[in-house]
Length: 176
Picture 1 (cartoon, helix red, strand yellow):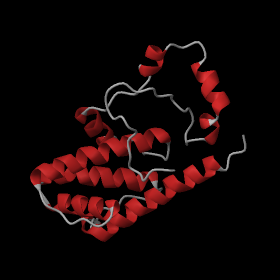
Picture 2: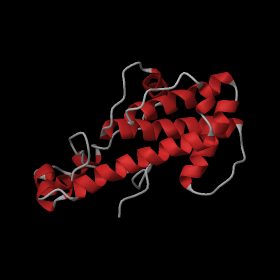
Picture 3: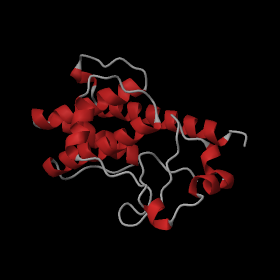
Protein backbone atom coordinates (compact mmCIF):
# COMPACT_ATOMS: atom_id res chain seq x y z
CA UNK A 1 0.00 0.00 0.00
CA UNK A 2 2.99 2.35 -0.46
CA UNK A 3 2.11 5.18 -2.87
CA UNK A 4 4.22 6.21 -5.84
CA UNK A 5 6.50 9.12 -5.04
CA UNK A 6 5.82 12.03 -5.38
CA UNK A 7 2.45 11.85 -3.69
CA UNK A 8 0.16 13.79 -1.42
CA UNK A 9 -2.17 12.51 1.22
CA UNK A 10 -5.89 12.96 0.69
CA UNK A 11 -7.47 15.33 1.45
CA UNK A 12 -4.97 17.81 0.06
CA UNK A 13 -6.94 20.69 1.54
CA UNK A 14 -9.65 21.14 4.12
CA UNK A 15 -9.85 19.32 7.43
CA UNK A 16 -7.25 16.66 7.94
CA UNK A 17 -5.96 14.82 10.99
CA UNK A 18 -2.23 14.49 10.53
CA UNK A 19 0.42 13.24 12.95
CA UNK A 20 4.07 14.14 12.44
CA UNK A 21 6.49 11.19 12.29
CA UNK A 22 9.81 12.27 13.74
CA UNK A 23 13.10 11.08 12.36
CA UNK A 24 15.07 11.24 9.17
CA UNK A 25 13.26 8.41 7.36
CA UNK A 26 9.77 6.98 7.87
CA UNK A 27 9.49 4.27 10.43
CA UNK A 28 6.90 1.54 10.87
CA UNK A 29 7.03 2.28 14.60
CA UNK A 30 5.07 5.50 13.98
CA UNK A 31 2.22 3.52 12.39
CA UNK A 32 1.86 1.21 15.35
CA UNK A 33 -1.50 1.64 17.12
CA UNK A 34 0.23 2.06 20.50
CA UNK A 35 2.25 4.96 19.06
CA UNK A 36 -0.92 6.56 17.65
CA UNK A 37 -2.61 6.25 21.04
CA UNK A 38 0.42 7.74 22.80
CA UNK A 39 0.75 10.68 20.37
CA UNK A 40 -2.98 11.56 20.54
CA UNK A 41 -3.60 10.95 24.25
CA UNK A 42 -5.48 13.87 25.81
CA UNK A 43 -5.72 15.85 22.56
CA UNK A 44 -8.98 17.16 21.10
CA UNK A 45 -9.88 16.63 17.43
CA UNK A 46 -9.42 20.33 16.68
CA UNK A 47 -5.86 20.16 18.09
CA UNK A 48 -5.00 17.22 15.84
CA UNK A 49 -6.56 18.94 12.84
CA UNK A 50 -4.19 21.83 13.40
CA UNK A 51 -1.10 19.64 13.08
CA UNK A 52 -0.99 19.50 9.28
CA UNK A 53 2.00 21.26 7.82
CA UNK A 54 1.17 24.28 5.69
CA UNK A 55 1.81 24.19 1.96
CA UNK A 56 5.12 25.71 1.01
CA UNK A 57 4.89 29.02 -0.80
CA UNK A 58 6.42 29.52 -4.24
CA UNK A 59 8.89 31.96 -2.69
CA UNK A 60 10.02 29.47 -0.03
CA UNK A 61 10.41 26.76 -2.70
CA UNK A 62 12.49 29.11 -4.88
CA UNK A 63 14.70 29.97 -1.89
CA UNK A 64 15.15 26.29 -1.00
CA UNK A 65 16.06 25.38 -4.59
CA UNK A 66 18.70 28.14 -4.70
CA UNK A 67 20.23 27.30 -1.31
CA UNK A 68 23.91 26.45 -1.42
CA UNK A 69 23.44 24.03 1.49
CA UNK A 70 23.77 20.44 0.27
CA UNK A 71 20.50 18.50 0.41
CA UNK A 72 20.54 15.10 2.13
CA UNK A 73 18.07 12.24 2.04
CA UNK A 74 15.44 12.82 4.72
CA UNK A 75 11.67 13.05 5.08
CA UNK A 76 11.97 16.83 5.16
CA UNK A 77 14.00 16.87 1.94
CA UNK A 78 11.48 14.55 0.24
CA UNK A 79 8.71 16.97 1.22
CA UNK A 80 10.72 19.87 -0.23
CA UNK A 81 11.43 17.91 -3.43
CA UNK A 82 7.76 17.03 -3.71
CA UNK A 83 6.75 20.70 -3.39
CA UNK A 84 9.56 21.71 -5.76
CA UNK A 85 8.54 19.30 -8.51
CA UNK A 86 4.96 20.59 -8.38
CA UNK A 87 6.31 24.16 -8.53
CA UNK A 88 8.60 23.41 -11.51
CA UNK A 89 5.99 21.41 -13.45
CA UNK A 90 3.41 24.18 -12.95
CA UNK A 91 5.91 26.74 -14.24
CA UNK A 92 6.67 24.62 -17.30
CA UNK A 93 3.04 23.69 -17.92
CA UNK A 94 2.04 27.33 -18.18
CA UNK A 95 4.73 27.89 -20.80
CA UNK A 96 4.47 24.55 -22.61
CA UNK A 97 1.04 22.99 -22.79
CA UNK A 98 1.16 19.57 -24.47
CA UNK A 99 3.24 16.52 -23.56
CA UNK A 100 3.54 12.79 -24.08
CA UNK A 101 2.17 10.43 -21.43
CA UNK A 102 3.56 7.04 -20.57
CA UNK A 103 4.34 6.59 -16.87
CA UNK A 104 4.44 9.31 -14.24
CA UNK A 105 8.25 9.26 -14.36
CA UNK A 106 8.23 9.45 -18.20
CA UNK A 107 5.88 12.41 -17.95
CA UNK A 108 7.99 14.18 -15.32
CA UNK A 109 11.24 13.53 -17.19
CA UNK A 110 9.71 14.81 -20.44
CA UNK A 111 8.30 17.97 -18.88
CA UNK A 112 11.53 18.73 -17.01
CA UNK A 113 13.66 18.13 -20.13
CA UNK A 114 11.37 20.48 -22.12
CA UNK A 115 11.75 23.00 -19.31
CA UNK A 116 15.50 23.13 -19.98
CA UNK A 117 14.74 24.25 -23.55
CA UNK A 118 12.44 27.08 -22.46
CA UNK A 119 13.26 30.59 -21.42
CA UNK A 120 16.41 30.85 -19.30
CA UNK A 121 14.47 32.25 -16.34
CA UNK A 122 12.19 29.20 -16.37
CA UNK A 123 14.89 26.60 -17.04
CA UNK A 124 16.89 27.72 -14.00
CA UNK A 125 14.20 26.16 -11.76
CA UNK A 126 14.51 22.82 -13.55
CA UNK A 127 18.31 22.98 -13.16
CA UNK A 128 18.02 23.84 -9.46
CA UNK A 129 15.59 20.94 -8.97
CA UNK A 130 17.84 18.46 -10.84
CA UNK A 131 20.84 19.62 -8.78
CA UNK A 132 18.91 19.05 -5.52
CA UNK A 133 17.94 15.54 -6.63
CA UNK A 134 21.58 14.83 -7.50
CA UNK A 135 22.65 16.07 -4.05
CA UNK A 136 20.11 13.82 -2.33
CA UNK A 137 21.46 10.87 -4.34
CA UNK A 138 25.03 11.75 -3.34
CA UNK A 139 26.01 12.76 -6.88
CA UNK A 140 28.08 15.78 -7.78
CA UNK A 141 26.17 18.23 -10.01
CA UNK A 142 27.66 18.35 -13.49
CA UNK A 143 28.80 21.65 -14.96
CA UNK A 144 27.63 20.36 -18.36
CA UNK A 145 24.00 21.28 -18.97
CA UNK A 146 23.89 19.04 -22.04
CA UNK A 147 23.41 16.01 -19.80
CA UNK A 148 19.94 17.22 -18.79
CA UNK A 149 18.22 15.05 -21.37
CA UNK A 150 14.93 13.23 -20.87
CA UNK A 151 16.73 9.91 -20.31
CA UNK A 152 19.16 11.46 -17.82
CA UNK A 153 16.35 13.10 -15.84
CA UNK A 154 14.25 9.92 -15.90
CA UNK A 155 17.23 7.93 -14.64
CA UNK A 156 17.67 10.40 -11.74
CA UNK A 157 13.97 10.22 -10.85
CA UNK A 158 14.03 6.41 -10.96
CA UNK A 159 17.11 6.37 -8.69
CA UNK A 160 15.37 8.72 -6.26
CA UNK A 161 12.23 6.57 -6.36
CA UNK A 162 14.33 3.44 -5.61
CA UNK A 163 15.96 5.26 -2.69
CA UNK A 164 12.54 6.21 -1.31
CA UNK A 165 11.29 2.63 -1.70
CA UNK A 166 14.43 1.23 -0.03
CA UNK A 167 13.79 3.58 2.88
CA UNK A 168 10.16 2.48 3.08
CA UNK A 169 11.19 -1.19 2.84
CA UNK A 170 13.63 -0.68 5.70
CA UNK A 171 10.91 0.98 7.78
CA UNK A 172 8.49 -1.87 7.07
CA UNK A 173 11.08 -4.41 8.24
CA UNK A 174 11.36 -2.58 11.57
CA UNK A 175 10.59 -4.94 14.44
CA UNK A 176 7.90 -3.50 16.74
